Amino acid sequence: MATRFRTLQGGRGQSNKNNETYFDYSLLFTVLFLIGFGLMMIYSSSSYRANLDYEDSAYFLKKQLQAALLGIAGMVVVSRIPYHFWEKLAVPAYFASMALIPLVLTPLGYSSHGARRWIRILGFSLQPAEVAKLGMVIFLACLVCKMGKRIRTMKGFYALLIPPGIIAVMVWKITQNMSSAIIILGIAVLMIFVASPDYKRFVIMAVLGSAGAALIVFAIVKIANSPELTEKLGFRGLRILAWLNPEAYADGKGFQTLQALYAIGSGGIFGKGLGESIQKLGFLPEAQNDMIFSIICEELGLFGAIAVILLFLLLIWRCMIIANNAPDLFGALLVVGVMGHIAVQVILNIAVVTNSIPNTGISLPFISYGGSSVMFLLIEIGITLSVAKGIHLKDL
Image (cartoon, rainbow, N blue to C red; front, side):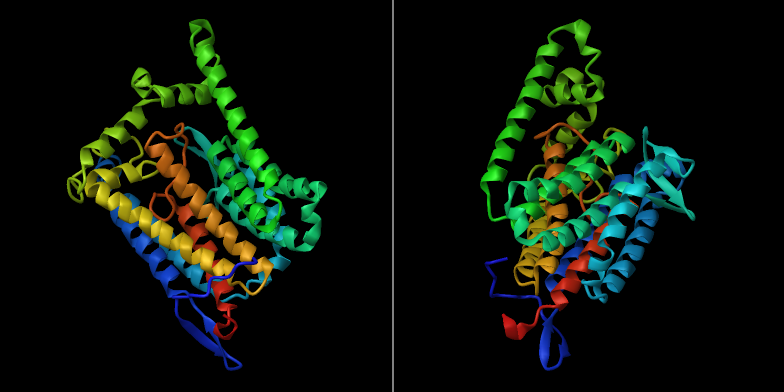
Protein backbone atom coordinates (compact mmCIF):
# COMPACT_ATOMS: atom_id res chain seq x y z
CA MET A 1 0.00 0.00 0.00
CA ALA A 2 2.01 2.90 -1.32
CA THR A 3 -0.14 5.78 -0.10
CA ARG A 4 -0.60 6.28 3.63
CA PHE A 5 -3.15 8.36 5.51
CA ARG A 6 -1.39 10.52 8.07
CA THR A 7 -4.38 11.34 10.24
CA LEU A 8 -5.55 8.58 12.56
CA GLN A 9 -8.48 9.59 14.72
CA GLY A 10 -9.09 6.34 16.50
CA GLY A 11 -7.12 6.56 19.72
CA ARG A 12 -4.18 5.17 21.60
CA GLY A 13 -3.69 1.66 22.80
CA GLN A 14 -1.22 -0.14 25.01
CA SER A 15 2.47 0.63 25.18
CA ASN A 16 4.88 -1.87 23.62
CA LYS A 17 8.54 -1.12 24.35
CA ASN A 18 7.74 2.60 24.59
CA ASN A 19 5.89 2.47 21.27
CA GLU A 20 2.27 3.49 21.59
CA THR A 21 0.03 1.22 19.54
CA TYR A 22 -3.11 2.30 17.79
CA PHE A 23 -6.67 1.23 18.60
CA ASP A 24 -9.52 2.41 16.41
CA TYR A 25 -12.31 3.35 18.80
CA SER A 26 -14.20 5.05 15.96
CA LEU A 27 -14.46 1.74 14.12
CA LEU A 28 -15.48 -0.15 17.25
CA PHE A 29 -18.17 2.33 18.29
CA THR A 30 -19.56 2.53 14.75
CA VAL A 31 -19.92 -1.25 14.59
CA LEU A 32 -21.53 -1.43 18.05
CA PHE A 33 -23.94 1.37 17.10
CA LEU A 34 -24.91 -0.47 13.90
CA ILE A 35 -25.49 -3.65 15.91
CA GLY A 36 -27.70 -1.81 18.41
CA PHE A 37 -29.58 -0.03 15.64
CA GLY A 38 -30.02 -3.33 13.81
CA LEU A 39 -31.52 -4.98 16.89
CA MET A 40 -33.97 -2.10 17.25
CA MET A 41 -35.02 -2.30 13.59
CA ILE A 42 -35.29 -6.11 13.69
CA TYR A 43 -37.72 -5.84 16.59
CA SER A 44 -39.66 -3.09 14.86
CA SER A 45 -39.89 -4.92 11.52
CA SER A 46 -40.51 -8.45 12.85
CA SER A 47 -42.65 -8.07 15.98
CA TYR A 48 -45.97 -8.39 14.10
CA ARG A 49 -44.99 -11.55 12.24
CA ALA A 50 -43.21 -13.04 15.28
CA ASN A 51 -46.33 -12.57 17.40
CA LEU A 52 -48.46 -14.33 14.77
CA ASP A 53 -46.07 -17.21 14.07
CA TYR A 54 -44.42 -17.77 17.47
CA GLU A 55 -46.70 -15.91 19.94
CA ASP A 56 -43.63 -13.92 20.98
CA SER A 57 -43.13 -10.48 19.45
CA ALA A 58 -39.46 -10.52 20.47
CA TYR A 59 -38.69 -13.93 18.94
CA PHE A 60 -36.41 -12.65 16.16
CA LEU A 61 -34.90 -10.02 18.44
CA LYS A 62 -33.89 -12.63 21.02
CA LYS A 63 -32.26 -14.89 18.43
CA GLN A 64 -30.38 -12.01 16.84
CA LEU A 65 -29.27 -10.72 20.25
CA GLN A 66 -27.81 -14.13 21.12
CA ALA A 67 -25.89 -14.22 17.83
CA ALA A 68 -24.70 -10.63 18.32
CA LEU A 69 -23.42 -11.33 21.82
CA LEU A 70 -21.55 -14.42 20.60
CA GLY A 71 -20.15 -12.37 17.74
CA ILE A 72 -19.01 -9.56 20.04
CA ALA A 73 -17.31 -12.12 22.29
CA GLY A 74 -15.62 -13.60 19.21
CA MET A 75 -14.59 -10.11 18.07
CA VAL A 76 -12.95 -9.36 21.43
CA VAL A 77 -11.06 -12.67 21.44
CA VAL A 78 -9.93 -12.37 17.80
CA SER A 79 -8.84 -8.74 18.28
CA ARG A 80 -6.37 -9.94 20.93
CA ILE A 81 -4.83 -12.57 18.65
CA PRO A 82 -1.85 -11.33 16.56
CA TYR A 83 -3.14 -11.27 13.00
CA HIS A 84 -0.17 -13.24 11.64
CA PHE A 85 -1.65 -16.23 13.46
CA TRP A 86 -4.23 -16.45 10.64
CA GLU A 87 -1.46 -16.73 8.07
CA LYS A 88 -0.64 -20.16 9.48
CA LEU A 89 -4.28 -21.22 9.17
CA ALA A 90 -4.83 -19.86 5.65
CA VAL A 91 -4.74 -23.20 3.83
CA PRO A 92 -6.77 -25.13 6.46
CA ALA A 93 -9.33 -22.28 6.53
CA TYR A 94 -9.75 -22.42 2.77
CA PHE A 95 -10.22 -26.19 2.59
CA ALA A 96 -12.45 -26.19 5.68
CA SER A 97 -14.66 -23.69 3.86
CA MET A 98 -14.80 -25.97 0.85
CA ALA A 99 -15.63 -28.97 3.04
CA LEU A 100 -18.49 -27.23 4.84
CA ILE A 101 -20.38 -26.21 1.69
CA PRO A 102 -21.40 -29.76 0.55
CA LEU A 103 -22.65 -30.52 4.09
CA VAL A 104 -25.89 -28.69 3.24
CA LEU A 105 -26.79 -31.76 1.14
CA THR A 106 -26.23 -34.16 4.06
CA PRO A 107 -28.53 -34.83 7.05
CA LEU A 108 -26.74 -31.92 8.78
CA GLY A 109 -28.26 -29.54 6.24
CA TYR A 110 -31.75 -28.13 6.38
CA SER A 111 -33.98 -25.90 4.28
CA SER A 112 -35.48 -22.54 5.11
CA HIS A 113 -37.69 -20.38 2.87
CA GLY A 114 -37.26 -22.86 0.04
CA ALA A 115 -33.44 -22.80 0.07
CA ARG A 116 -31.07 -25.41 1.49
CA ARG A 117 -28.18 -23.23 2.65
CA TRP A 118 -27.77 -24.01 6.34
CA ILE A 119 -26.28 -26.76 8.47
CA ARG A 120 -26.93 -27.54 12.11
CA ILE A 121 -23.92 -28.56 14.25
CA LEU A 122 -24.18 -29.14 18.02
CA GLY A 123 -27.48 -27.27 18.10
CA PHE A 124 -26.10 -24.20 16.28
CA SER A 125 -27.23 -23.12 12.82
CA LEU A 126 -24.47 -22.13 10.44
CA GLN A 127 -24.43 -20.86 6.87
CA PRO A 128 -21.31 -22.27 5.14
CA ALA A 129 -21.26 -19.34 2.70
CA GLU A 130 -20.43 -16.97 5.58
CA VAL A 131 -17.54 -19.19 6.64
CA ALA A 132 -16.36 -19.31 3.03
CA LYS A 133 -16.18 -15.51 2.81
CA LEU A 134 -13.88 -15.29 5.82
CA GLY A 135 -11.80 -18.32 4.80
CA MET A 136 -11.33 -16.93 1.31
CA VAL A 137 -10.18 -13.51 2.63
CA ILE A 138 -7.51 -15.11 4.83
CA PHE A 139 -6.34 -17.52 2.13
CA LEU A 140 -6.20 -14.93 -0.64
CA ALA A 141 -4.29 -12.45 1.54
CA CYS A 142 -1.71 -15.15 2.30
CA LEU A 143 -1.53 -16.26 -1.35
CA VAL A 144 -0.92 -12.72 -2.64
CA CYS A 145 1.94 -12.25 -0.15
CA LYS A 146 3.56 -15.55 -1.12
CA MET A 147 3.29 -14.88 -4.85
CA GLY A 148 4.92 -11.48 -4.54
CA LYS A 149 5.85 -9.90 -7.88
CA ARG A 150 4.49 -12.90 -9.78
CA ILE A 151 1.00 -11.40 -9.54
CA ARG A 152 2.14 -8.84 -12.14
CA THR A 153 2.33 -11.57 -14.76
CA MET A 154 -0.78 -12.67 -16.64
CA LYS A 155 -0.32 -16.25 -15.38
CA GLY A 156 -0.02 -15.12 -11.76
CA PHE A 157 -3.00 -12.79 -12.09
CA TYR A 158 -5.35 -15.50 -13.31
CA ALA A 159 -3.92 -17.99 -10.80
CA LEU A 160 -5.16 -15.68 -8.03
CA LEU A 161 -8.69 -15.81 -9.45
CA ILE A 162 -8.90 -19.61 -9.35
CA PRO A 163 -9.31 -20.19 -5.55
CA PRO A 164 -12.15 -17.67 -5.06
CA GLY A 165 -13.67 -18.86 -8.33
CA ILE A 166 -13.83 -22.43 -7.02
CA ILE A 167 -15.47 -21.33 -3.77
CA ALA A 168 -17.95 -19.11 -5.63
CA VAL A 169 -18.97 -21.89 -8.03
CA MET A 170 -19.45 -24.33 -5.13
CA VAL A 171 -21.61 -21.85 -3.23
CA TRP A 172 -23.65 -21.10 -6.36
CA LYS A 173 -24.17 -24.66 -7.57
CA ILE A 174 -24.47 -26.54 -4.28
CA THR A 175 -26.39 -24.06 -2.14
CA GLN A 176 -28.08 -22.21 -5.04
CA ASN A 177 -26.87 -18.98 -3.43
CA MET A 178 -25.83 -16.74 -6.31
CA SER A 179 -25.74 -13.60 -4.17
CA SER A 180 -23.06 -15.02 -1.86
CA ALA A 181 -21.10 -16.23 -4.88
CA ILE A 182 -21.16 -12.69 -6.31
CA ILE A 183 -20.01 -11.25 -2.98
CA ILE A 184 -17.12 -13.73 -2.78
CA LEU A 185 -15.96 -12.80 -6.29
CA GLY A 186 -16.39 -9.10 -5.49
CA ILE A 187 -14.20 -9.38 -2.38
CA ALA A 188 -11.54 -11.29 -4.33
CA VAL A 189 -11.46 -8.80 -7.21
CA LEU A 190 -11.09 -5.87 -4.79
CA MET A 191 -8.23 -7.56 -2.92
CA ILE A 192 -6.40 -8.41 -6.15
CA PHE A 193 -7.08 -4.88 -7.47
CA VAL A 194 -5.37 -3.37 -4.42
CA ALA A 195 -2.38 -5.72 -4.70
CA SER A 196 -1.95 -5.48 -8.48
CA PRO A 197 -0.22 -2.49 -10.12
CA ASP A 198 -1.81 -3.14 -13.54
CA TYR A 199 -5.33 -1.66 -13.56
CA LYS A 200 -5.91 -2.25 -17.29
CA ARG A 201 -6.90 -5.86 -16.62
CA PHE A 202 -9.66 -4.76 -14.30
CA VAL A 203 -10.97 -2.23 -16.82
CA ILE A 204 -11.12 -5.00 -19.43
CA MET A 205 -12.85 -7.34 -16.96
CA ALA A 206 -15.38 -4.63 -16.08
CA VAL A 207 -16.15 -3.90 -19.73
CA LEU A 208 -16.50 -7.57 -20.63
CA GLY A 209 -18.63 -8.26 -17.54
CA SER A 210 -20.93 -5.33 -18.26
CA ALA A 211 -21.27 -6.36 -21.90
CA GLY A 212 -22.03 -9.96 -20.90
CA ALA A 213 -24.68 -8.86 -18.39
CA ALA A 214 -26.28 -6.59 -20.99
CA LEU A 215 -26.40 -9.43 -23.52
CA ILE A 216 -28.02 -11.75 -20.99
CA VAL A 217 -30.69 -9.16 -20.17
CA PHE A 218 -31.29 -8.51 -23.87
CA ALA A 219 -31.64 -12.24 -24.57
CA ILE A 220 -34.09 -12.71 -21.70
CA VAL A 221 -36.22 -9.81 -22.93
CA LYS A 222 -36.30 -11.31 -26.43
CA ILE A 223 -37.32 -14.70 -25.03
CA ALA A 224 -40.05 -13.04 -22.95
CA ASN A 225 -41.63 -11.78 -26.17
CA SER A 226 -42.34 -15.41 -27.04
CA PRO A 227 -44.93 -16.72 -24.53
CA GLU A 228 -44.13 -20.34 -25.33
CA LEU A 229 -40.49 -19.80 -24.28
CA THR A 230 -41.08 -17.67 -21.16
CA GLU A 231 -41.75 -20.74 -18.98
CA LYS A 232 -38.25 -22.01 -19.76
CA LEU A 233 -36.52 -18.95 -18.33
CA GLY A 234 -36.33 -20.26 -14.77
CA PHE A 235 -36.68 -18.21 -11.60
CA ARG A 236 -33.55 -16.11 -12.25
CA GLY A 237 -34.78 -15.12 -15.70
CA LEU A 238 -38.16 -14.19 -14.23
CA ARG A 239 -36.40 -12.08 -11.60
CA ILE A 240 -34.71 -10.07 -14.34
CA LEU A 241 -38.06 -9.54 -16.06
CA ALA A 242 -39.60 -8.50 -12.74
CA TRP A 243 -36.70 -6.06 -12.24
CA LEU A 244 -37.39 -4.43 -15.60
CA ASN A 245 -41.15 -4.29 -15.06
CA PRO A 246 -42.18 -5.13 -11.48
CA GLU A 247 -45.81 -4.11 -12.04
CA ALA A 248 -46.22 -6.80 -14.71
CA TYR A 249 -45.12 -9.45 -12.18
CA ALA A 250 -46.87 -8.00 -9.14
CA ASP A 251 -48.39 -11.40 -8.32
CA GLY A 252 -45.05 -13.20 -8.53
CA LYS A 253 -41.40 -12.23 -8.61
CA GLY A 254 -42.15 -8.50 -8.57
CA PHE A 255 -44.32 -8.56 -5.43
CA GLN A 256 -41.56 -8.11 -2.84
CA THR A 257 -39.85 -5.39 -4.87
CA LEU A 258 -43.08 -3.43 -5.29
CA GLN A 259 -43.87 -3.62 -1.57
CA ALA A 260 -40.34 -2.42 -0.76
CA LEU A 261 -40.73 0.52 -3.14
CA TYR A 262 -44.09 1.37 -1.57
CA ALA A 263 -42.39 1.41 1.83
CA ILE A 264 -39.57 3.67 0.62
CA GLY A 265 -41.94 6.05 -1.16
CA SER A 266 -44.37 6.36 1.75
CA GLY A 267 -41.61 7.24 4.23
CA GLY A 268 -40.98 10.69 2.82
CA ILE A 269 -38.17 12.80 4.27
CA PHE A 270 -38.55 12.08 8.00
CA GLY A 271 -40.59 8.87 7.94
CA LYS A 272 -43.76 7.75 9.67
CA GLY A 273 -42.02 7.22 12.99
CA LEU A 274 -40.25 4.28 14.60
CA GLY A 275 -42.58 1.29 14.79
CA GLU A 276 -45.21 2.89 12.54
CA SER A 277 -44.50 0.95 9.33
CA ILE A 278 -47.50 -0.36 7.43
CA GLN A 279 -45.66 -2.59 4.98
CA LYS A 280 -44.25 -4.81 7.75
CA LEU A 281 -47.81 -5.83 8.70
CA GLY A 282 -47.87 -8.81 6.38
CA PHE A 283 -47.40 -6.89 3.12
CA LEU A 284 -43.59 -7.03 2.74
CA PRO A 285 -42.20 -10.60 2.91
CA GLU A 286 -39.07 -11.05 5.07
CA ALA A 287 -39.14 -7.45 6.26
CA GLN A 288 -36.52 -8.17 8.94
CA ASN A 289 -34.12 -9.83 6.49
CA ASP A 290 -33.06 -8.59 3.07
CA MET A 291 -35.67 -5.82 2.89
CA ILE A 292 -35.04 -4.18 6.26
CA PHE A 293 -33.60 -1.07 4.56
CA SER A 294 -37.05 -0.37 3.08
CA ILE A 295 -38.55 -0.43 6.60
CA ILE A 296 -35.84 1.98 7.74
CA CYS A 297 -36.87 4.29 4.89
CA GLU A 298 -40.55 3.98 5.76
CA GLU A 299 -40.17 4.58 9.50
CA LEU A 300 -37.22 6.99 9.55
CA GLY A 301 -37.53 8.46 6.07
CA LEU A 302 -34.82 9.72 3.76
CA PHE A 303 -33.08 11.25 6.78
CA GLY A 304 -32.73 7.83 8.47
CA ALA A 305 -31.63 6.13 5.25
CA ILE A 306 -28.88 8.70 4.65
CA ALA A 307 -27.76 8.42 8.28
CA VAL A 308 -27.35 4.64 7.90
CA ILE A 309 -25.42 5.05 4.65
CA LEU A 310 -23.13 7.63 6.30
CA LEU A 311 -22.43 5.20 9.15
CA PHE A 312 -21.37 2.55 6.65
CA LEU A 313 -19.19 5.10 4.86
CA LEU A 314 -17.55 5.95 8.20
CA LEU A 315 -16.93 2.26 8.87
CA ILE A 316 -15.42 1.73 5.42
CA TRP A 317 -13.28 4.87 5.80
CA ARG A 318 -11.87 3.63 9.11
CA CYS A 319 -11.05 0.28 7.50
CA MET A 320 -9.33 2.11 4.64
CA ILE A 321 -7.17 4.09 7.06
CA ILE A 322 -6.15 0.93 8.93
CA ALA A 323 -5.32 -0.83 5.65
CA ASN A 324 -3.18 2.07 4.43
CA ASN A 325 -1.23 2.16 7.67
CA ALA A 326 -0.99 -1.60 8.29
CA PRO A 327 2.47 -2.88 9.29
CA ASP A 328 2.71 -5.19 6.25
CA LEU A 329 0.95 -6.34 3.10
CA PHE A 330 -0.72 -9.32 4.75
CA GLY A 331 -2.39 -7.13 7.37
CA ALA A 332 -3.42 -4.58 4.74
CA LEU A 333 -5.01 -7.24 2.54
CA LEU A 334 -6.92 -8.74 5.47
CA VAL A 335 -8.48 -5.36 6.18
CA VAL A 336 -9.14 -4.73 2.48
CA GLY A 337 -10.97 -8.07 2.35
CA VAL A 338 -13.14 -7.12 5.34
CA MET A 339 -13.75 -3.66 3.89
CA GLY A 340 -14.65 -5.18 0.53
CA HIS A 341 -17.05 -7.66 2.13
CA ILE A 342 -18.95 -4.92 3.94
CA ALA A 343 -18.89 -2.45 1.03
CA VAL A 344 -20.03 -4.93 -1.63
CA GLN A 345 -22.81 -6.28 0.56
CA VAL A 346 -24.11 -2.82 1.51
CA ILE A 347 -24.10 -1.61 -2.11
CA LEU A 348 -25.84 -4.73 -3.41
CA ASN A 349 -28.45 -4.77 -0.64
CA ILE A 350 -29.45 -1.14 -1.15
CA ALA A 351 -29.42 -1.64 -4.93
CA VAL A 352 -31.79 -4.61 -4.60
CA VAL A 353 -34.17 -2.80 -2.23
CA THR A 354 -34.35 0.23 -4.54
CA ASN A 355 -34.77 -2.05 -7.61
CA SER A 356 -31.50 -0.80 -9.14
CA ILE A 357 -30.51 -4.43 -9.79
CA PRO A 358 -32.54 -7.67 -9.96
CA ASN A 359 -33.83 -9.00 -6.66
CA THR A 360 -31.51 -11.45 -4.94
CA GLY A 361 -31.11 -12.40 -1.30
CA ILE A 362 -28.44 -10.12 0.18
CA SER A 363 -28.58 -8.98 3.79
CA LEU A 364 -27.61 -5.54 5.10
CA PRO A 365 -24.47 -6.03 7.27
CA PHE A 366 -24.98 -5.77 11.05
CA ILE A 367 -28.63 -4.73 10.59
CA SER A 368 -30.52 -7.51 8.80
CA TYR A 369 -31.65 -10.58 10.73
CA GLY A 370 -29.18 -13.44 10.38
CA GLY A 371 -27.08 -15.09 13.08
CA SER A 372 -24.27 -16.50 10.91
CA SER A 373 -23.84 -13.23 9.07
CA VAL A 374 -23.53 -11.00 12.12
CA MET A 375 -21.21 -13.41 13.95
CA PHE A 376 -18.71 -13.74 11.12
CA LEU A 377 -18.85 -10.03 10.31
CA LEU A 378 -17.94 -9.28 13.92
CA ILE A 379 -15.09 -11.79 13.78
CA GLU A 380 -13.84 -9.97 10.67
CA ILE A 381 -13.99 -6.68 12.59
CA GLY A 382 -11.94 -8.38 15.31
CA ILE A 383 -9.27 -9.22 12.72
CA THR A 384 -9.32 -5.59 11.55
CA LEU A 385 -8.83 -4.34 15.12
CA SER A 386 -5.97 -6.82 15.53
CA VAL A 387 -4.25 -5.36 12.46
CA ALA A 388 -4.83 -1.85 13.84
CA LYS A 389 -3.06 -2.82 17.06
CA GLY A 390 0.05 -3.55 15.01
CA ILE A 391 0.29 0.11 13.97
CA HIS A 392 2.75 2.16 16.04
CA LEU A 393 1.95 5.84 16.36
CA LYS A 394 5.62 6.79 16.18
CA ASP A 395 5.80 5.37 12.65
CA LEU A 396 2.95 7.53 11.32
